[in-house]
Amino acid sequence: MVELVKDGSTGMEKVVLREPGGATAQVHLYGGHVTSWKNEKGEELLFLSSKAIFKPPKAIRGGIPICFPQFGTFGSLEQHGFARNRFWVIDPNPPPPPPALTGGNNGNGTSSNNNSSSKQQPFVDLILKHGEDEHKIWPHSFELCLRVVLGLGGDLTLITRVRNTDSKNFTFTFALHTYLSVSDVSEVRIEGLETLDYLDNLKDRERFTEQGNAITFDAEVDRIYVGTPTKIAIIDHEKKRTFVLKKEGLPDAVVWNPWEKKARAMVDFGDEEYKHMLCVEAAAVEKPITLKPGEEWRGRQELSAVPSSYFSGQLDPIKVLQG
Ligand SMILES: O=P(O)(O)OC[C@H]1O[C@@H](O)[C@H](O)[C@@H](O)[C@@H]1O
Image (cartoon, rainbow, N blue to C red; front, side, top):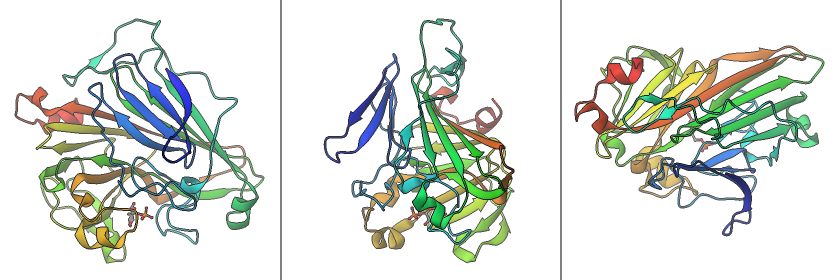
């Protein structure tokens, strides 16, 4: 089921997706921003700050902001570009719907593919086109489309397309700035980024090579891992939950946690909230994307939340990453 509703507390419009198993997702038109993703038990899987501000020009703190046409400060635009603080619209001419059932996570980590073609995965297509305000700061005609699909089984897929509707080339960087909800970030580890190179945002983007076996957290982290595998696992020991992030067209992965000091400096973020979030962002940053007139780029991120008990109490990262 898909419905457009007005959020009672903020007055903002959002699209609510519900799949028959009970999982839900919601997408605010402001920012084309996924602000909630819940599993069939109603547990929230994305972090949304209790201090998030739902008012332009501030982007919503949490969920999945879209960074376009600039990631971070990699250019002359405002941090992370303007797509996250513009009002998007529901696409009146979306591409054909996704196939009825591509399978999903059935709770034990495997993919199910039952053939009940009567069941449609709820999805919504949003679009952002350049307007006069955007043209003043980024003089290119474009269409940015976002499809959000809530798979039967509860997986959350974001498919983004950028189309050059201009008469000259343009170049952009991009990220799906995903805030995952975790029990305690110091009990979380990321697998799939070991031995990779990263640009350290805390050290003027100097390039380092990851040495550790897995990435764990005991201080501020702000890194762009470059040329990563298509699958990354975020393992929350305390919650016994593993997020599996699969991506296409987005070669890099940003990992960010502000930790204590930066958390205190952010007006739209609780002082202690850094403990309960971790951003892992599918991104295209190191090698910006150039589109010729009429060309289109596509990026995709699929998130699933797998109970760690699936691995009989013994997490098997190989299965998570290669399974
Ligand atoms: O406060 P913002 O603009 O939402 O950005 C949050 C963080 O987003 C991350 O993606 C960046 O790597 C960080 O450098 C930045 O601090």
